[in-house]
Each structure stands twice: as structure tokens, then as C-alpha cells.
Image (cartoon, rainbow, N blue to C red; front, top):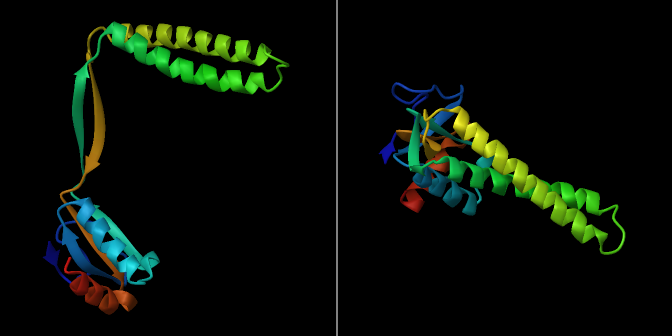
Length: 163
């Protein structure tokens, strides 16, 4: 953690709005969130707080190999959910046990078309992206700012919380 109670802007980063004061900087978002949560628990008006991520980058975590079969299976799953949604909507107008068949047929059709589209979508890439992944945003530093009128109270609460 880096302290800097009276700065108007972080070094080399996004400037704070006029009248904002830096209370603390952290290397992870969880630490910055913990400070704001502690301030909230102690009655601080947190609507005057901003958390600014500086040095933002994307991180892509590769989760596995993607084959045409896996793409079809993922598409079938998504299609089944969509089919369930449509089936429930149409099922509202079904009388008696027919609602069950409306939902079942909708799920089956959704899974079939989802699988077909998933397979075709992956096939169309011609092996250019044969892996699945999850992308996230990460920052090098997370700065906690408060309105200048509340800076003294925020600094006291930060010191009390020992964060």
C-alpha cells in the first residue's frame, strides 16, 4: 500500500476530478474494496469515494482446446437454454399437459440449432482460434479517492482500519 493523503492525481495516471484527494493506493482491487467497505461500515458517506484503476491491461487466460465437437456442444447448451426460455413463453398459452411438450420440443429444437450454429461458427474460423479463454481487466494500481471535503475523515478511518 502507498499513502498520499493530499494528492490531486496519481503519478503518471488518470487525474482525479477537481476537489478529489488520494486516500490510499493498493496493488489489488480487493484491498481497495476492503478499505471502502471498512469506511462504509464506520458510517462514511461512500458516495463520495472513487476507486480508479491505473495501468489497465487485458489478461486472457486460456482455458482449454476448442474442437468442433466442443463448439457444437457449447452451442447446443446455449441453444437449449434459449429454447427453454421460448418454450416457457409459449407454454403460457398451452392447456393441460401440452405445456410440457411445448417446452420439451422447444428445448430440443434450440439445442439442435445451437449445436449446428456452434459447429459452423467454429468450422468457419479454419483453425485460427482453436482454444477457449476468459478475458479479464487488471490494473497495476488501484487508487482510492474521496471528495476533498471528506478527506480528513477518510484518512482517519483508513488509519483506524490499519489498511
